[in-house]
Length: 427
Image 1: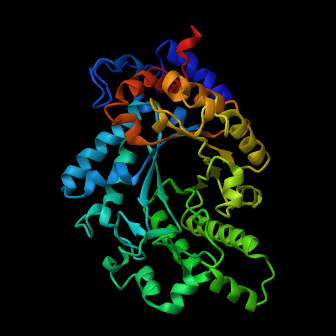
Image 2: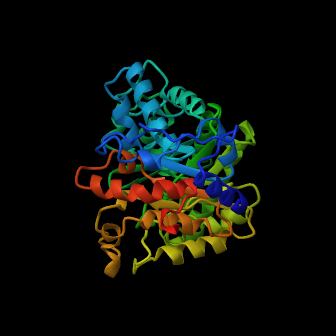
Image 3: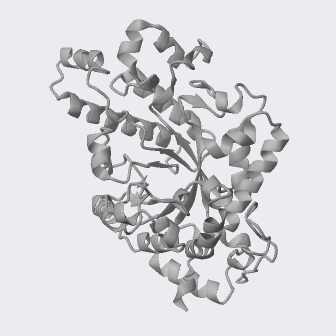
């Protein structure tokens, strides 16, 4: 990978990189809604037919439901196709090669699913299939497509009444016995209980369904057990476990449940196609994942065949007092070392131009240092287990709020070239 990067830097420097050896500069390429069309021209490059030479490193952008839903709700199929094609093209021109798209955010779906109801975020049942369109467009653009799902987090109790009775979530909520066994209710929101074999099967079946779309990857994020969940919330399920002879403490039982859920989901995905990548994006502070969310990334990394990659959310600056970027990155690198699991750190593009109130004396870092993302991109590439980088999220990069647009435009001058392997400060 290092050899590939050095070769890329050299070739980019002389303007040559396609299958025929020619790299063309795009004179009119730009990111929409960020001012003068020529502002970003000089830092974009048209890769053309040479993407296969860059496939060794993942350069991904998260497209959240916040980015995606407005393209679908109340709009026609033709509108959606055009808008998503523009979105994919923006990513391609900015040297991303992978889209990680949130298609199941709240135990609901942005595509026709046998297991989960249509999401109200897209206006309910559609006459077309957005996921088929997205995978088709991604392929046309030479981009990998990873379906991103939230396996446990569901909708609110106020929203469950709109879910048709044909779906398991509604059936389980309506049945008092199933509600105790298979669901967890916390602060008005419904969560699937991974302590239930039936729940884990539903999650695994949903993963297999997504995999059959021909996606390149399936990813879950950091919504496991909700933080601060009292032990009474899943006590009936835990008591049943004890009644069947289980001896783990409730804390360890929860961690066992999330491990089994992740393992069974990954197995189901791989059963569709062994080439599909399966990854998890946990919180950046390892202790929070283990102690608050009851997910143990190290155990999953050590379990052969459980994961292909970890994408920890390293949403910190170098001067963050609570959790410095360098310390967190090093901790995850040590965890992944020797496991065969790649590390693809997630970086906080959404913080550009904003104060970070939890960073102590480093609270102004994202305001004061426009090259911060670029330096983080270069830093993660030096990690021994690095397989790439992910940025959160599309809207923050390409459609920032007006107040943050100047800061993002300035940041792009260094972090887009960094994605491409260039270092403008080097000379």
